[in-house]
Structure formats: C-alpha cells, structure tokens
Length: 207
Image: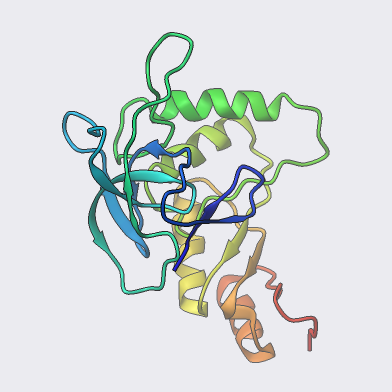
C-alpha cells in the first residue's frame, strides 16, 4: 500500500518502495496523530525512521493514535541536504517550550504582514493550545490588534471553553463554526451560550 505525503504543490503524493523523497528531521507532538522526534545525536544514514507527519517530518516514533493515517511508515534515511553555510536545518516549531519560538514567529510574521495583500489567512492547526501555538498568537496579537478570529469547535461546550481560553490570551472570537453548527438547534445553542455569531461551513442549507 503506498504511503501518502504532501507534495510541494500542496497536493497529496504517493510514495512506493524504492522511491526517494525529500523530508526533514523534526519533531511532532500531535494530540490526535503521532508523537516523535529527532533522537539524541541526530539521524544516522542507512537507518530506518518513521514518517511522523504528512508534510514529511521524519524521526523516531514514540506513539501513534488509532486514527487512520496514510503517511505513517518507515523510511530509510540517506543523508542530509545542507544550506549555503553547510549546516542542516530543522524547520519545524517543535519541540514544546523552545526559547527561540517567539523570534522565529516574529520573523515569519514580519515577512507575511509586510506583503501587499487584501487579507492574510493563518491556520493554527487543530488545537490552539498545541505546541508553540500560544507563543505564535502572542506574537501575532502584538503586531495586529484587529485580527478576525474564526473558532471551530465540535460542540457548544467546546466552543464556550475555547472562547474563554482565547479571551484569556487576549484574542477575541468573531465567528464560530464546526460540528457545533451542523444543525439549527446546535447553532442556536452555540450562539446563545457564547454570544458570538455561529455559521455552518460544511452544509449549504442554513435554516
């Protein structure tokens, strides 16, 4: 069965035995998918490691959830691609608590926010309390106080809890979506509990 990862175009790409692909040693601390990282001393050429993320993050697998994942498979590490300075890079924001997270996010945001655009869409993954996401939000809010925030939640109580946590972080929720808006009853309950407009983005009918 082929392994499916993300191509540079953003589309899915199948990898079969004997294929060679470009990946990166890195960390993954997902609350739903996989947990793993770079072993002490780095990856050893010729040794098998695990694909930890669809984007091609590779390392030692600590644990994986029972959810179906098309990318989790072993891959043989052949060697590193180095930059102009001769140093390999680890371009992920993991692990948790890294002291340079704010500086990394600050540089990235300065580049994005200086671009000429009508709007910039930023996704904070499936969990805004995930690895380095609170640090990212702090960096973002320090640069833009007029951010429009869309919160996706599975139920009304999750929406209420998410709204309160984000408010404690200085982030105002402008719109709520997700499974908590799948029916008129759920949508009305979410709006009543949270005091925020709720809209379903998955079904065309809005009762």
